[in-house]
Structures are given as C-alpha cells and as structure tokens.
Length: 165
Image (cartoon, rainbow, N blue to C red; front, side, top):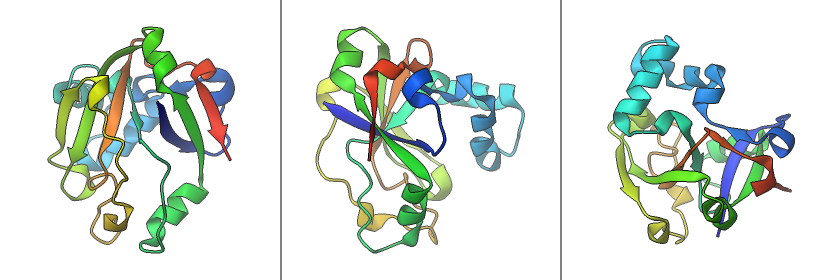
C-alpha cells in the first residue's frame, strides 16, 4: 500500500526523511491558533493528550489531492508542496510504525476532532471527497479522513519515501 504526504517545497525528506512535529519545533506553531499558546511544551502536552504518540505521528493521505475546480485552496496548497509517496507495507514490515490513528473529521479549523486507533487492515482506500473542502468554512482536513502514523522515532526514514512528480 502506498500512502501520501505533502511537505513544503525545498525540503530534504529524500535524504533525511519526513519528520514529525516533535522533531521540528517550528511546526508546532501550526497549532498556536487552535490552542491559544505558542509554548512548545504546552502544545506537545495537548498533542499527547489527544492520543499517545501524536507528537511523533506523521499525517498521511490514501491518495494525492484531487483538485476538482471547486475551492482554490486545494490548488494553492498543492502548488506550494512536494508530494511524497510512502511505502506503508515496507514501513510496517520493518517494524517502524508504533500505531495508526484515523482522523475521520473535525469542526472548522480542526476543533473537536474525531480520532480513533485502527489496525492497518482498516485503512480506507475509497476515493476522498475533495469537493467538500472549503477555505471559507475552514474545512480542509476536517472533511477529508486521513491517518496518523505514529513512528517509533518520530521520523519516516528516507528509504521508504519517493517524490511524486
């Protein structure tokens, strides 16, 4: 199975791997607005309070974003990112994944998340409803189910990643 992760252009993931927020403190600031704090320890504590290992997790999709001409937010987001394909089967076979969590939805801007722990055979590969995304309503990943791979070391090593052009 292949899973997908978007990362800002100019990254070093093909040589260094994909890092979780616990490995990249500047990424913690993405949660500042949601939590009302920019204190890294408070943000990490909140993350671990949602589920064990979240600070070492990497968010993945089951397919690349499909912009369907609806909300330009998707196209803008994809244009500033590189798409990485992750070899999930090899990661799992090599014992790199500690747990898998599914985020099935949330309210606008990521509040009131619906997250549950799952097994690998429960990863849903059906097409994602990209047409529901709306910048105006604050709905991006709140309407697109996606997964968190909790990595033992907080990193998906480079050997499991390839860039999709």
